[in-house]
Image 1: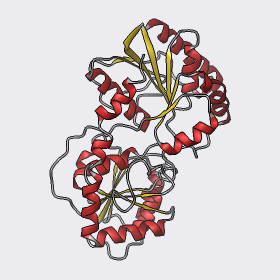
Image 2 (image 1 turned 180 degrees about the vertical axis):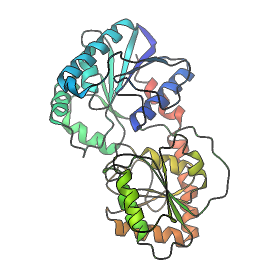
Image 3 (image 1 turned 90 degrees about the vertical axis):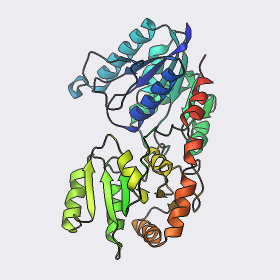
Length: 352
């Protein structure tokens, strides 16, 4: 089998943290001479830009609720097994708790170096079928990758016999636009309950003297209309901009002075790392795994999960230029800690 060839398994190809992380990994691996096959479990248009050298494999069947989960999972397992057999590659890397067990089952008896990566927070409650499949299949893998120390500590208790390593995500290679920072507080992410963008809107609305600062929010999701209506009700349209789905957030990172990640659950805070890489003074809640990224008060601000605490942090940063500048300068160190070479080499060490 070819050790310079790897199969990457992704749940789908659209917008999302898993898809972005796997795209980054696929592009980097091809840049260092690895032959990469990116295999999607769902038929979907590609959102993130892939290198031309990445070989993309998409199923012919469509996902349908009428099919039922068990029947759909069976089709995915058959599709993955056929794909694994057809590609002369010893290494398989699968992302995502829902599809990892299916990839593991599909690889049985094929002599693959099976590497899986969990992507959600340990606090997230998966469906019962996912919990049962993980319990049955995870002990069969060669390596389990976790994104944070917090997740490693949890999974070492849950799966004590598995080899486990922490590998965080790359920092995206954005074109950093050199421009003056503006009075902008930025949010980039899904409009969903776990990301808690409503908390940010509430916290921002409580700032009595905004000193010319506006809130820019990039993204969409199930809570988008609810938040849009909430902003209308508060008559904050002149202070809050909703940009919708944004494919190239770097132009917003380049000019923002403050970044807020109001998530209550995160597998790995990609957007926070991106904001820090642009030297933005950033704020997050202590419910997310921030410990591996830096130190509160030095690299970013960490507050308790309450929008009043978030309001206080925003007031502090809006009114203290020195504090903003200090956080901004220290935040840029994330570029070295999460460089593609440093993270990519951790993956290369796992390949056989």
